[in-house]
Image (cartoon, rainbow, N blue to C red; front, side, top):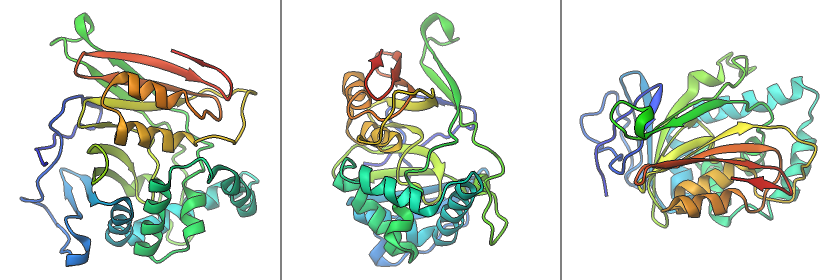
Length: 281
């Protein structure tokens, strides 16, 4: 299943036909047969990464196609964490707790990324559970709030702009990428992200379900649950209704996170507020 994708920089209109053909590409990478239909191209200043197949295969394609960018981003994130007093061993300890809660398909995808980028699996795993500096802002509007009545959702990531690879000097935002996934066992989706990220900071899927996250720090927190970025991947991969999405977001909670989740088919949007032991929709 492939349909044409329309990319907007500031806002995303939720609709079901959002998956691009690999034709008409600008600077498209030549792929070996082992990468199947994975490809990367740049169009209108936006780098687009297309992944498909099993979760391991999608990770492998990601690591192979954006090897340099993945290494830069993971190194930048770990370096930035250390500048705030965190040690690598702190995140390894955290990983040892949360790994039991992360679905195996995403651990497979991280193994694939590690193999494709030729970096240690632990490095990829640790880099994908660091979400200390996510703040974000956003809104959803539909009906009388929009000119055409359709549902629009906007988010600003609000990441620090000084997350930088100490080796190359490249900033995290320079390696931003729109990831389009077509998993063999899940719904297709698109996810504005960074090279090296397997979890999601927000996106939308072929069923018109969209999610985004905003930080909401609370003392009611613990690590024995599914990290926020992987709950959002679960929404994109496995939710066909807004009820499915909300059920995922309020299950196996960890820390203070607020979500905006929408269904463009209805259209409707909800705010989901969560802490370790509480949730409110």
